[in-house]
Length: 526
Ligand code: OOB
Image (cartoon, rainbow, N blue to C red; front, side, top):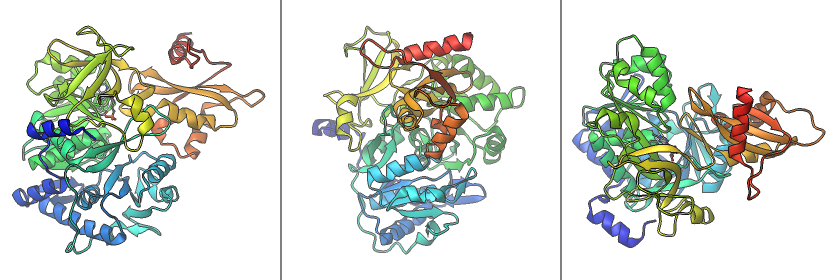
């Protein structure tokens, strides 16, 4: 948490206003009660209905034993119930732990155990996968299912009479735990407070020009920080606009939905932008769409240049992180800035440092490690004291692991990454996490997972392994099957496999990932 002198400053400057998520929804239900907040297929939910659902569900969850401060792992697709669940938990002061729909037994099991979750809320079947099969991974947590519950508790049965709810949380409390993309063996959890998060939401809504006439399409997973708050669904609720939920992201689903619902703004990762561009090239643009936000991974200049001509809307680049700091190009910035930078911070009080490998400032305009601190950037991960000692400086700056250059005009250009992470089209893979799973395979002596360039996803993952003597040769399909059976999320399963006799080693005795990447280039060229 922030030291008192910073907290005081952030309050004095009007960033932290003492608003909770429940306050936000209550205000909107009173100012915009009859307006539609959420569209999910044919289902339309007004602000008044949304608040009412959230209170009734809060009551049912309370009856089940969910209390202020408890953790609840939430894994839902982009569906209307998601909002009932999270606003019910916010009202109670229980902390949603935001899992992604792609997570499987390994991740869900870890989140439930690490957070000592009292409940796991999921769906029945999504994208052909039966999420109820993950119940065993949830351990002692009560399993609540949206849809057909099987032997578990039906979410639909938990909407109760809301009379007699206990008092809600205060705005300085942790409101939820967000997942970090991470570079470590186990994912880290990010505690965000009502005060800090809602500041970023309000400021983002303003930067992105949201009004009550905005129609936002949630196409990336709704629990991801980009979709949730940059300005995302919460920014739309702040502005009194309308959220349209897309269950799938493919052009055949999404492009007609944009036209039907007259969507004005949406947020995508670069590979999705590419897919949409290819689907629309030579056709009419998306007439209602005013802004396409692209972020989560670096957008190539050549792709950026096609967006306005093909889609007929403005491009906004977004460089953010679930830990806090979010940078936007502004809607009135000149083309050169929008096409070739990743924006500038939300807040005048976002402090940025760009340092060399020895933590000394680099000369202005040169590339270095980005560190940041500010009114909506965390000061530490949840229950991770040891990791926090290296992930943050003594004076509270977060080491982002990104390599950036700050231009004279204050805009950032992302030049690379120093963390052991693969950014697979915006989906983050911690190398060490996958390596640890690979090391459990009886034939694997050593493993290193690195990023390889990919024209569509930006990066894919390649697992280098050294096999034990005398074992049968390992194949990619066998390795992939093994990791899937261990319950690892699909996006973390290596795209490629290279078996080596030994790993190149750096001067300090670590596996040289740089040499592995170089070896792969040679193999590809040869
Ligand atoms: C967003 O959040 P996370 O937590 O999934 O990932 C953060 C990391 C950053 O540290 C950076 O490495 C990468 O994703 N990243 C970008 C980028 N946006 C994020 N790298 C290059 N260019 C960009 N535009 O990804 C996220 C959170 C809020 C808003 C937008 C994205």
